[in-house]
Image (cartoon, rainbow, N blue to C red):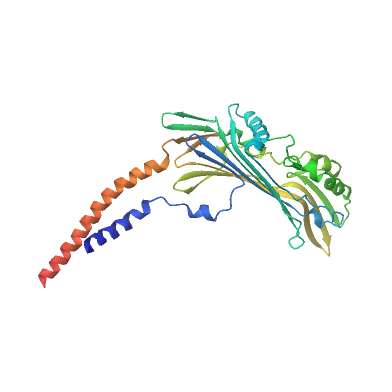
Amino acid sequence: MLRTNLTAIVLLSLIAPLIPTPGVAAASTPNAQYSVGLTNGAVSVSLILNLLQNATLLSFEKSFTLPLVHVSAVGSNSTNLAQELQGALRSKNPKAQVNNLNLQVVSSSWSNKTATQWLNISLSFSVTGVSTTQGETARTDLSWKSFAVSSDYPVGNVEINRIGEKYLSGLAADMGVHSGSSSLIQIFYHVNGRPIDSTQFQSAVNNMTILDFSSFETPVSKWQQSQVSVTGETWSFTGGRGLGMVYTQEITEGGQLSTAAYGLFYDLTGTVTAPYGAQVAGDTVIFATGGFTEVAMVGIVFSTVVLWSGAFLFERRIQGKTGRKKTQR
């Protein structure tokens, strides 16, 4: 019994580092807002957009809030949106097919305590027709990742794409009127990170769309690569910070400058995850269809045999030395 336990303990201590485990870094990293995952012949897409508005804080907009919404589109009632997305993807790759679409849209009430209101949009779907396999090598085209939908899309009475025109036009008009700058106050306008003249602010806001991911046009090969864990390769990219509509006040008082931004804001960051050992060429991800898991398991089985033999010989040596010491006594 002692011999069996000793062999098992030595073996476990030697083989443990070879067993793939979930990456610790992945667990502590915030979820990416635009995630594309690749497996053998399948591509999954997850979009999580968190939009924050604080325009209600403005003295001339105390009555403004986004409508309270809680809507979804899944199964048969998501067909039209799936077709809209598919049309946008096919402008990049004519063979792209959108499947299994699921949309959830929820807004919170305005909070006086946090001085914020949230609009959360969650969209997931799978994409087929963009991968080819030759032998044990798969190639997946991701050029469609920078798709954009320009048309409106209502779910019930709730607009989920052209929200600028639907919900923010009056707010933008009021902000445009309050453009007076002086030696003490400077007013600036931005839409999706671009400076806009006050006279064009409402028009620019009206053209805002949420399902616009053109900022991810940069090829994946130029994204930042990192290995999250031994089970996959990851590339990350920042599509934009502080997107949306922004009305900024810069106030100089007593020689001190203070800045306050109001409007509706959100960020866009993205990741592409592929099997271990995957490589990219432009927007094409190339990887072995067997994936890391099969290769790793073969290696672990082989290593188990070798290490078990090593552990057994190591134990015999220990027992041999122990026996010799007892004889000397």
